[in-house]
Image (cartoon, rainbow, N blue to C red; front, side, top):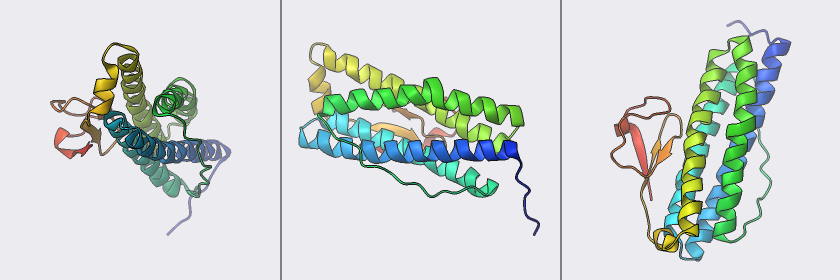
Length: 193
């Protein structure tokens, strides 16, 4: 077996993948803690949303780790403890996390990977970006529901979310066809409650 030669450009993509992996693992851990906090507050629907988003972030992290291992990068991540606030404050923090990934993190990482034509990194970044766009919409919609009349009724009831096992796209719609982010089969989605 021959070893792969890693150039300067590859190192930049590897560093970006390591950063993305760390970000996804950090968010996954935070969203799991947010789900537990929401359950404690009796906001079961919000807890379901956090669990679905945590699973999606875990899928993103797995995709990034697979590419990192292929490129010879490190998958060792240190995850700092995230401060847990009220469920509504945690929802706002999660929305900020998702918007950061959509607006800044993944567009920058995609630009670097595209310039190198690194298809595996491009796919991993692209899937995470597209899925995170939907996560940001979900979180934003729930913030608006909570700000509207009767919004906490939705938050108190447990809900099912459906997460694509390939890219981490998440939806509340049980009738979604193939994944709009990666075209994965609907039958392969995971139901998260």
